Length: 328
Image (tube, rainbow, N blue to C red; front, side, top):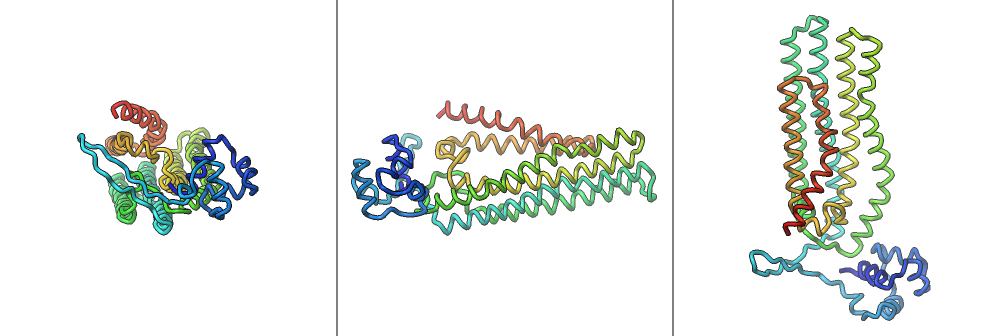
């Protein structure tokens, strides 16, 4: 536990707010906030004052302990040193996750966009425009679909190899070097408005994407070409919205991982059931989507699997966590 964490812990034991502690130490509340966020270090005089106020030794406050976790497995105890994340490694991880956000978002966008050409060409063949037969439309569209999906898979694989060395951050309990937690909290706070803006815009685009199709169907009831063209436009709008959501969500997730919040908290890392269920859940969602799409070839509607899966995800994972906690 570092000094910043000890100040927070001891202050809360006394039931003091940051402002009340600041008054007792004759400093500003901002100074206390910086101490607790590991953005600055109190001078020796303040360390002595806090040791007297908290009824602890100065050695306790100043000693930066590297805890060890005792892991009990199959009735045997073994000591395992908890990893410590340095400032350099934290910055490398945040940069890698920002790159992952762009890469994965582009890959998902390509997967959705891969349906546009096959839908549009199918519409041209049905409307008997440009002399395109159904066989030609299907062949060209399917070839484009597989090419774009192959490009997306390449991006996913490249990204996985780039972030492989940071996987332990998601699965293992770790400590951070002095100043890392404060830096991450500062970056998280600065990113919050960007996250809210792009997440909102992405969700709005997905929700409004069927609007052109609905309006077109009302105005031009018998135009098959227009209906297909608007379906292709719907997919383009959805792909753009999903790109925004995935990109900013990945960056937001990187902060939660380093701060060990939410599903990455120390308690949840000791309960791996939820993570396993999450991986299986989204694998099943992908299987349902691809099977339904290829069997019916109704790509303009099968995308509805993803918002439904997103809504059901939270209760499924929560149930898995409760079961895992009960069996521990």
